[in-house]
Length: 159
Length: 109
Image 1 (tube, rainbow over the protein chains, first blue to last red):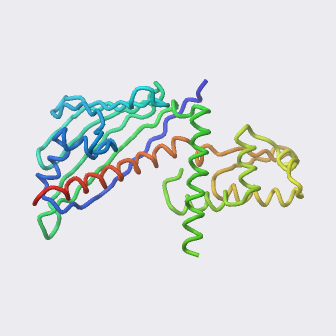
Image 2: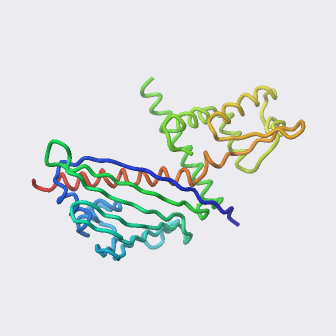
Image 3: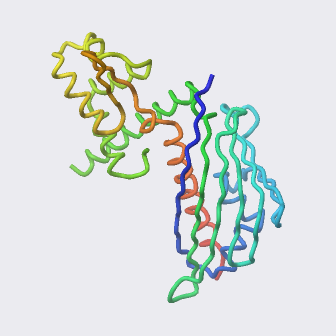
């Protein structure tokens, strides 16, 4: 039995790309382009992103059959302003449990002093108790110990 | 929550000691008193308390004294999967945007 919990979080990532806003926007709007960067699939094996890029349209991405734990991504587009803004919500599930629901905005601004694009990705998420599964918690701890190993390597490298 | 680098550094520094890792593993199975915690280790109570203090400063462990017994437990806010998940969300999007940059760079001007 899970302990019920909700954790809210907001984060923002800013990037500047050396391409005009229309080109950067197209990489979000074109399924062929988006599948090349979104899910971590390679050019040889793009992920199975099923997207309907219009207001009210849905987008789904599922882990390969048999993946453990299985994961699911489901998004809905709420606002699309070509070359300027995309607003969408998405939820993630892991092993059949809903683990988070997020509101994301992507803003495309002309970069200062050039033809590039400043992209601002902001996400507000509610992270649910489905994650506090003991097995996942253990894996989380294991992951933390892995990170510890990397951190120690970095420390050794800079010493 | 593991949302800042200094906090992460404190966590990893706390976990860089084998005794403290053993303490965290033990507490992962449930809260125990400091004296119970000290039992498997060949060290004095004050030495164990010192390790607990380092773990508390990192946010990994929290302790509470009731009467004469100090009980320690994992602080799920620091070690919570939710905290990790949020960190992973951010990392996931950073990697995505890295790949987006690579895809854009391949395209002709």
